Image 1: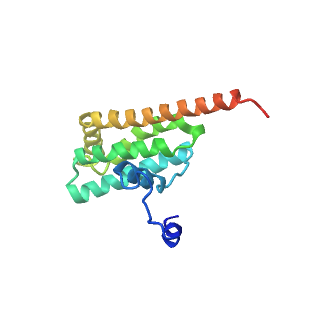
Image 2: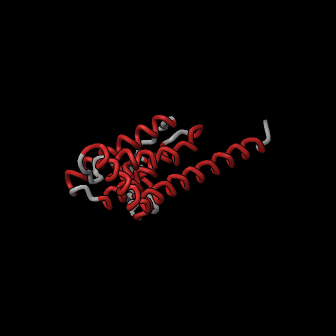
Image 3: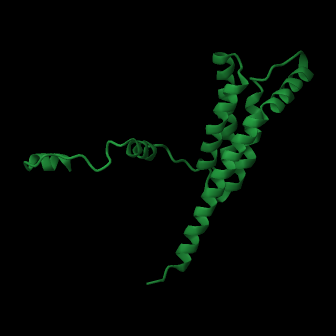
Length: 162
């Protein structure tokens, strides 16, 4: 559009709000992928990402549980946003499971299976705030998506047929 105006001899003017920070964020979000995962797919996605982040946390930050918890919250949100409509209720269920699965490489471990289990249980107890926070984020996103879905269906039913 701007090229046509410039060629026509008129000065090119930017679109309204094109330079504002909000407009840039909206444009960036529109370019993001929008996959739709099944309930099982969302669980596998979340568990795989959290396991990968657990290993990276161990390598880069010396197995910091706080870094792991901070990274868990956006993964929870993405899981809740990318699950398909029919499987919305699975997101708040798979997110805490994925937290525990990904915690295995980060948790301190002692000798043998008993030491590893004790480290995992201790890490779950001490990082419960991040676990609850990520689950709350996922649950809130699912509730918002469900309300929007119900409203769209109600609006479609109330629309007069032509």
